[in-house]
Image (cartoon, rainbow, N blue to C red; front, side):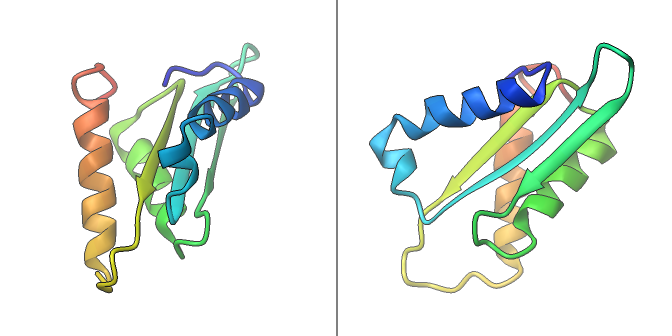
Length: 104
């Protein structure tokens, strides 16, 4: 979602959590990167218990130069441990969302 402040990031997350399916996900991995009105870069991430996933998602936003965007990838545990492949899947989904919106 396009965002221009940390407050908007929280609004986006709150709106997503209104969807019960998303709210019940095992992990809602979040990363955002935005430019403040003063020109400073503000970025952060949240793993939501999926160790290192938020940082990897934020790294993707950094390397593609995406700005003024918040990405949330929801993941449901299905009983199979994906190991490191989970990062590939999380980043792939994020790229699929960012590209058509012109962030990549």
